[in-house]
Length: 478
Image (cartoon, rainbow, N blue to C red; front, top):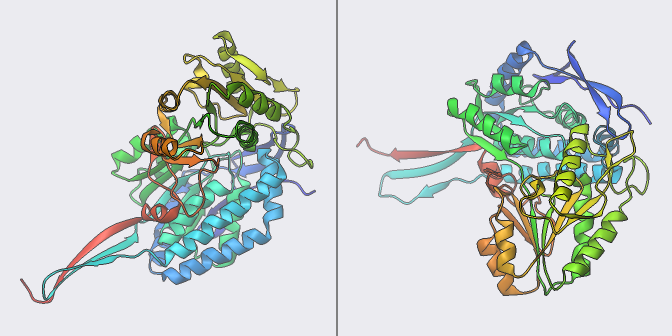
């Protein structure tokens, strides 16, 4: 197996390395496997200049031609999926099979937005003789996009797909901990013939990059995926420059399990999905509110399946869950479990770090957790689930809505009236019934409350990268 690549900056169609760099660490063994270059002020200024020039070229490119490059880049990424998945597993830790699925998911974003690029329709508003009112959608401009470490390829892909399809240029700053996915995206677009400056890739100290890019007059949109705390800071920074933002922030997804559902099937499905990506997913099902009549059965099956999860190095065959991505997550989970225990929760499985080498943590289930435990309000972002009994659907909905977040929510029921009640009352941007899939390329994705605003994906996603222009045209001077 070849080693993880060193990752440079990609500015104005050219790769560059810098003297200042950061290590890339394999979370399965804590070994340094590569380096990522860090941008200085001059690099960022170069990226801004390149994005401004690239936007002039790209906005004048026909939508059909933009779509062709998006599809060509997606085809290259599909052909290179084995190499990309290997690099993602090495730097992030997720099982290789999950990494390959992530690459395919990223390609689907490009393919979907390629189709939408030629369907960004305007409209003609009826008017009187000799007067025309025409509404057009035009690209918003150069975008500053910041993506997190948990999905190194698909998270950057969402933002690049929207920006490129709309006719924007983009400066992308992915996570320095997991840089390879974005690097492969930039390579594929360069090989597909994307003009220089349309896609630029920078790494470095996050606060320094955001404070330099976001207030700059070249930047017309800030697109961010990450924590609510950081999202608030970036939104405030953008507000000073009157720059719009697209924020996909944290979640703490509830799962309502009604008494009429198949408790065993729901528990198995939930336990498997909870441990996907080691629970490091903003839509991960975390707070389970189970009707008291099926609570014991659900808890027993969920615990059994969670405990049976095969944990190990993501490159090893048969592994279902790799390590956490960094030592910060190990410390955070350890503290949340200790706090819940102190307040009376029962740990039915897991709760501790595995070994001393690598950031491995046991799949963990906490039962009957009191409302004042920190885990009931703080997103664990790891392989930790809370399972609590409730006496009714109304109680479950109240519990589901009791946090500041509203990104994803789930429900298991076969009753139409229960579905209707959840649709009306559950506070979430994405509600899934009898499935734990929260987002696909063709549907809009985003949150309410402290989970952000704006949408990625679907028809709605492309609109954030565009502005609406109304044209009033009178044949005669009036």
